[in-house]
Image (cartoon, rainbow, N blue to C red):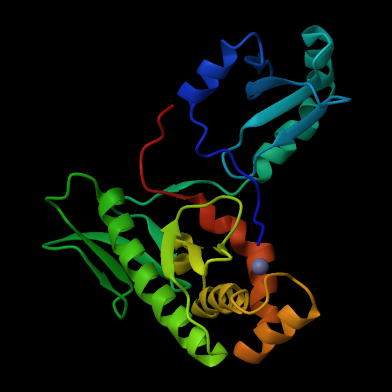
Length: 257
Ligand SMILES: [Zn+2]
C-alpha cells in the first residue's frame, strides 16, 4: 500500500554527508519571498530536470542529469519559483505533539494536557501527560504506539480468525511509503500512525494485510477476500488515499535542523 513519498528520515546530517560525495547533492537557496531552500541532486539515470516538493517535510529537490550544468539547473528552478512557492504554501502545516496541541486518535480530536500521570482519556477527549515527563511529545508517542499495537493486534487476530490462517508476528513502524505489509513468512507490519485515523481505516488496513496471508497479490481474488473479511472496505481505502498524508503532519520530536 503506497502513501506519499517522504524524506523525513533523511535529516540534514545525512544531506551534508551526501553533499560531500563529489557533488551528488548540494544545497542552494532561491532568493525571493520567502527564500526557498533547494537541494540539487545529480543522477546518472535522470534525462531531464525534475522538481519535487515533498508534501511531508517541504523539502524541494531538483534532480538533474549527471552531465548537466548546475547554473542551468538553478535557472530552471528560478523559472519554476512561483510553482514551488504555491506547492509549499499548499502543504499541511506540521504539528508538534506538545502541551496545548490537538491531534486525532481513533479519528477523534484530542487535546494534550498536563496532569499527574500519562494516560489517554478517550471519553474526555484528552491525552494527559505528566508534568514530570522529560518530553511531552515522546510521552504522547509512547501512549499512541501502545494503543496502536492493541488495536492492530486485535484487528489482525479478528481477521486472521475469519480467514482461518495465522500470522507469525506483528511489527509497528513509522513508515513513509506504506501503511502496512505482509511478508511471505506471514509477518505483518503496520504504521503506528494508523491509530490517528478513524478506527474503520485501521481495520481496513489490517483486513488488507491479513488477506495477503491467503493471496500474495492485488488481483481480483485478493480484493474479493478483503471484501469477505471487511465488507464495505472501499470507502476506508479511499479515505486513506485522500487523507492518509495528513497523518504524517504530527511530529513527536524537535527537528534536528
Ligand atoms: Zn497489499
